[in-house]
Image (cartoon, rainbow, N blue to C red; front, side, top):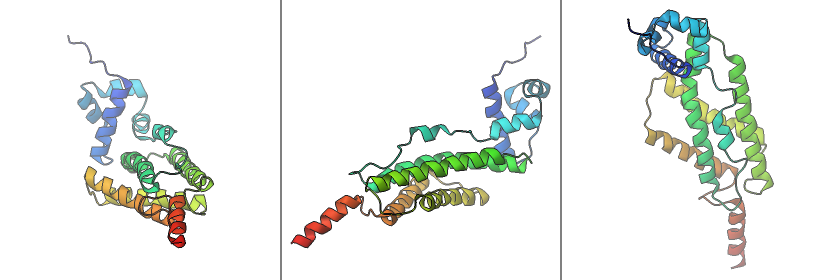
Length: 211
């Protein structure tokens, strides 16, 4: 008699995630077990219940890893648009992956309000700090940091939500272009245009005034 296949918890969670996202809320343990080559009772013994397995597979990270790799604020003397592009691209990559998981939890009738609220709170806090440091370093104009942070996050979230709801598959090139144009918009609104910092623009205006 063949021995039961051994699978790790991470393999089970990944398989559950893939099945749940493809099934759009109609998922059974048998579907996950079939994908892994194990039995549904084996999954129950490992995680206790279908609900716990789905929650573990789909819930957002309490502290998203990508936040730890982002710079605290913009650098003086470097193009603001390119710095914003890198910042927004990191947020977009995480949100575009996480949003379908959150919506799947909602469709399955599983709550993740606390995790979702904690995650978004960390996003706003980090973006606000980025803007505040930009103000201190003279890289951007005088703006209240929280409204700017909400505007940035809102633009990314709305794109991700609409794309998911209309089942629109966007290419990597289209996503990159969207983030690039969004970064250019915010760079212009915050005081930098054409890739220059405010200090560079002031210097150019002063130089022109002396001619």
